[in-house]
Image (tube, rainbow, N blue to C red; front, side, top):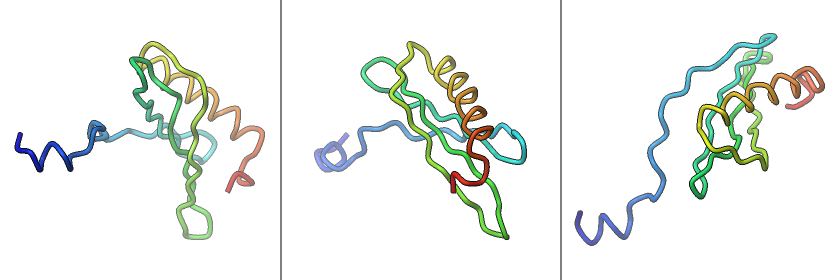
Length: 90
């Protein structure tokens, strides 16, 4: 890696393509974020309304030891949020 590559390259890993989970017409993208050797609950909730794709970014303070466990909890918390807020989240 050259000096300029090292100076100007992103420290974050490229994000991998996430398959959404459909729940009550919403699409949930669980995208756990690596942080200090643990994983933060992170993702997006999307829904098309009136021909426009609406997105709500979802990040929580919870840190978990594995990416899979963070994504599972993201899914559960997102479903609860959808049940409580519905389309008002947008």
